[in-house]
Amino acid sequence: MRSEMLNSILSELNGSSTDIEASAIISTDGLIMSSMLQADMDDDRVAAMSAALLSLGDRTAEELNRGTLEQVLIKGDNGYILMTHANNESVLTVLARPKARLGLIFLDVKRAAKNIDKIL
Figure (cartoon, one colour):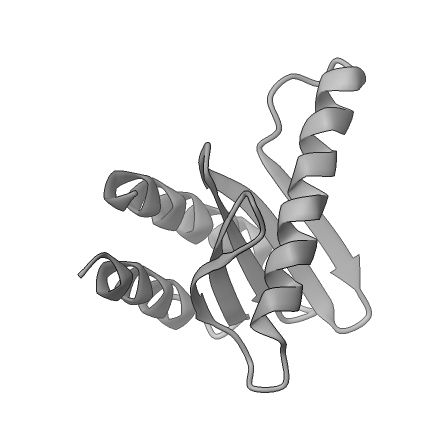
């Protein structure tokens, strides 16, 4: 039941914008909880990298006195990777196209993270 609800949140998130290519909910331990990733992506690898990067972001924000980490944004030639805490035990990772309208995606991701937190 819970996994169906998480899948529904990801489906709604991915459908909210044509700029969103994929998304996943990952435990802070680096395990996939739910995903809508592209077929050529390894779920376990995405999970491990997301958890590691968010953990590093948390420590960096703390060490450099930037307060509580809100998100990690990576921009590459082929698009964006956005990671944010859904709660203390989970990470929401979103892949977006290179010309994505990030403001709208940030809003959609924030809403999805709140919904994930309610379920978990």
